[in-house]
Image (cartoon, rainbow, N blue to C red; front, side):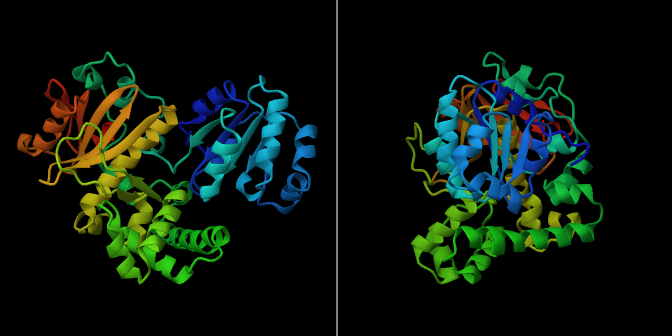
Amino acid sequence: MHGMKRSCEALLHSYLGTFPCVAVVGIRQCGKTTLLRTLPQSWKQLDMERRADHDIVSRDPDAFFRLNPRRVALDEGQLVREVFPALRVAIDERRSEKGRFVITGSSSPDLLRSVSETLAGRVGIIELAPLSWEEVTQTSGRDSLLRRLLNRKAKAAELIEGLKPRGTVGRAHEFWFRGGFPEPWLASGDEFRKRWVDQYLQAYLYRDVKRLFPGLDDVRFRRFVEMLGGLSGRVLNFAEAARALAVSQPTARDYFEIAHGTFIWRRIPAFSRDVMKRVVRHPRGYLRDSGLLHALLRIPDLDALLSHPQMGASWEGMVVEEIIRQLNALGVAHEYSYYRTGAGAEVDLVLEGDFGRVAVEIKHSSVVDPRDLRGLRDFVNEHKARLGLVVTNDSAARLFEPNLVGLPFNWL
């Protein structure tokens, strides 16, 4: 990732001035180790996947932290479970001292549980994802609609006034097709990207998941992962998934939990606040990286993607993920959901936080018919949303109504 500055670098150093410990979590190969290299050289960095480093810490974690009471970074810390209670003791001995430890972890549902239960109140958590659109275009830190949104007094027209694109529409589509994993961006060539993704899936299935869940039926789980390409963007029906895999519904639910907990799948709950109408209450989900999705669907190039039945769902998932990645990089606390009524009215993404409630509609088209915005308009009015945002491939940002704006994705 040489030359690609991560958007959350500022957040990492801010958290080090606020918390005794910072945890950086995310899917494998998203850049956590590279992020650690932005720490000053005075930091001691140990990789728990390296046998020698693992032995140093795991032999006696309490003694390790007594000998190394500050400026220690542990990469892939979930591999030494005993480290969390020892870390809590070390932190509590100097509770007022900030910026002492950084721990990273990937592909482990137990990691967040250990962090939240053992280090509650002592740790700031950063979720790191593959590269975002603003990182690929090296425009991190630039003025944006999401940054302006943090000003609750800003009106809709002010949110888009003077904004500029981060890159061309063609570049945005390249990012959409390739996804954000750093390694394929460093080495050019479609052949390398295809081979890398295939090897990545093998490593995910046979290394991480099997190690975390040794009793898992890896043949069925592999079929499940391949199924995720067709399920991305759909409302989840656990009974259908269970029948397709010839497993029980609880097992199918467990598979989705594993995929979500290991950061390859994002579960989007249904919006249920202030709801007076009959609404769909099942969650929906997306594969978090569009490049991984396209590999599972065997989509060879952008032309094939544009004519693929999953094109709309793929574009929608990529935009949803981009918005969430940018908010996470800013350290903005938020909740996300989707909204669909029994009559078919739908909002692709509902964001809620200190910035208010924002409804997002996502369209790949360049031209938006105002009649297609009825569901978004009704939601904004009925649920007192601050803003309705339409993300498109238009050539410019537009104010459709006083509280309804359109923004091209490459401007996001």
